[in-house]
Amino acid sequence: MMNDFQRIGLLFLCLTGSALAGPAIPPEMTDFFPVGRSFKGVKIPTYSTNVLKSVLEAETITRIDETYLDITNLVIKSFNLAGSVDSTVKMDKALYNLRSRELVSKTEAAVNHEKFVMTGDQIKYDTEKDVSTMKGRVKVVVPNARQFTGNFGMDAMTAGRP
Image 1: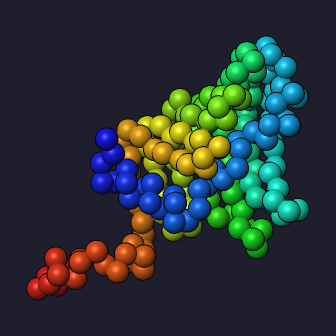
Image 2 (image 1 turned 30 degrees about the vertical axis):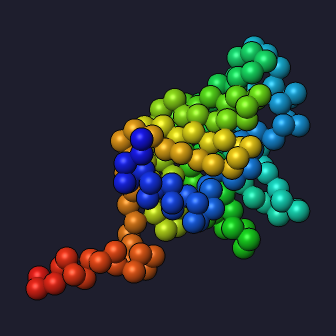
């Protein structure tokens, strides 16, 4: 069951567009990763109608078997229409299931967005449903929360305080 912070984090991911939008590894790329082989310094761009959507960067990607890719030092950068990075997802270790097209961090993950920063013990991204969930000790920092929340009634809570 999700706590309030996890719900807020999921809400931010939904409102701002998933930082992991699209398949982590495009299906047509999986044949380039033969079983048992490791690849270093991997960068895979994803495009939508000739516009750069995201870039996956990994220190190493190892094809474990027909189903799984083991990934180390993964960074996924998502780009806005102007071509600037608007969010970055980082994790030290991850596993990508080629059949279900799910990416799961095996270590703490961080989502840095222009509007918030979210960290947690694990992030799971289902590329088929385009849904990300974060579990564990989830922390969301929204520097300018009042711009997005209408103050959540904070004015009433702080009334009479300097």
